[in-house]
Length: 222
Image (cartoon, rainbow, N blue to C red):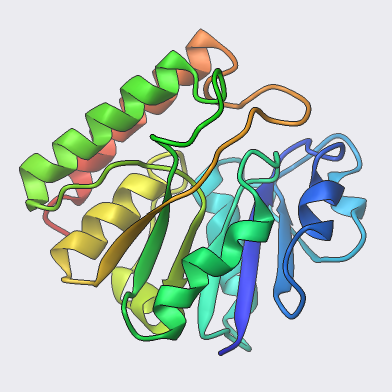
């Protein structure tokens, strides 16, 4: 099965080369530069897409649109900060490849390094999965960015959120549409360089939290 990874990136020139060099051989790599002011868009070893509309969901959707003309069987999404280990990608891909799942998510909650998940992240994740459980009946453990989904299953979700509500939308719609969902415990590290767009400051965390609440309410019946 053909596999591609989409990496949304905003000012991640220091960590991105390490991410790309660690991705397993045979995986197509697409980096989406979401309006960086550094050298993110000049990274070697990947196909680069430029998306000027800021927002995590906007960047990921741009990567999916780019792949649509020659789609993979499985698409992986991961961040550009090297917090998730690209060497562990096969653990997300394998259950889909062997017909046991349609969506596989990395669960960071038990194996994250000390300090890798900030209090704002832990609170936001816990709140999101609790709300999803209340609205859909499906119990998730995490809301992390490292995930793999069958391309045909992705098409049924009709993803639309342009911001940090993207992961909530995907997980809520996947549960509502009856996709086979699996969470795999994987390690999570502190980012290599730079500051998190969410947990690095209180304003970013507050905005992301508000968007999570909005997304749960907005997508619960879609």
